[in-house]
Length: 239
Ligand code: 5RP
Image (cartoon, rainbow, N blue to C red):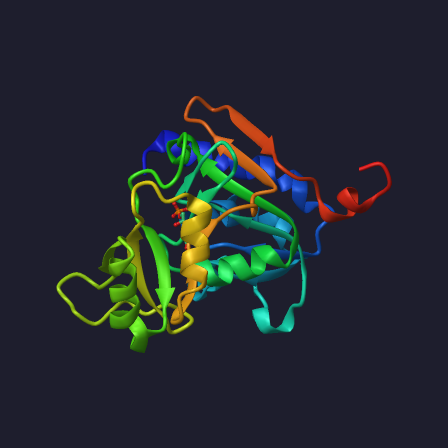
């Protein structure tokens, strides 16, 4: 990662610190941006209940002296912080580069406020933009799911470690198929199709999950796009 990009992520993470003051239970996504966030706002996290979306993030937090709780002990979160691989101006995202999208979506869905930090290189006029969409699949079902996807016009690639046949296995015990949907299939339809396919555990299309998008730019500016306000504010009279 370039120095300017790293600085952009740090600046964006600093801005997100403002949202933490009122939060008690904080969910954490997975990936290098979340690690930058952890390091940058460490002081604001020491008195929070942290919930990690992956073993990777739990270990990153632990290495800093933080102690995330097991997600199974949590029923709802005040705020969820994460990044994405690609995002469009409507806040629609492609995630799952790190294969943690299923728990990321679960934590985001249970959170009052969802904030996503991206650098400017991840913003595109529409998504997906050249990257495949990760689909988490029951390992025993990979051949059947892959065939059904291919029959429906999807390009498919099973995610495997370099030089191996055995698939990469996620924290949840799933395999990952990276898919390219048929060219003119709307993203919502792709998501619906994947959700109806037996054997699919989850996928990396996130529509309606970004309440706030914080974009770090390499010239040092930070842009905040608000799609939805926190749940309590939305529920109050006149909102
Ligand atoms: C992991 C994700 C990540 O948010 C996404 O891959 C971005 O990662 P990074 O911050 O390393 O660029 O969806 O499942």
